[in-house]
Length: 102
View 1 (tube, rainbow, N blue to C red):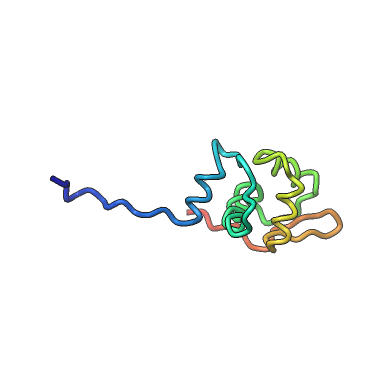
View 2: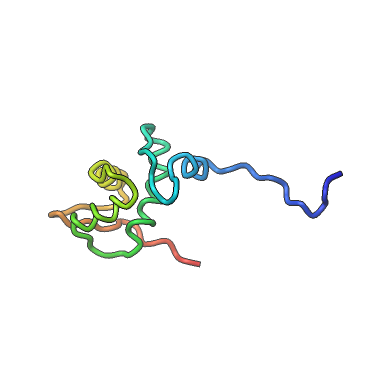
């Protein structure tokens, strides 16, 4: 017999599936090869590594990204190519404001 107070199971979103597959203990286990999966993961990386709307020197960008994955140059390039960060003269900046914290 089923309990009427039990909530029905919901399906995971595509983003949740990608996060489950590629993030373990707060680190990326791999960078997705498929662009679609990478696009779902990049906003998570942006919010996790660059929560403030300010300038970041390349050295700091590398340090922050290294906490997630060793291939910092690929992550930097993907964030810029996706339009989530801008780069000018070695200075990086978010192109979108930080997510509102609840």
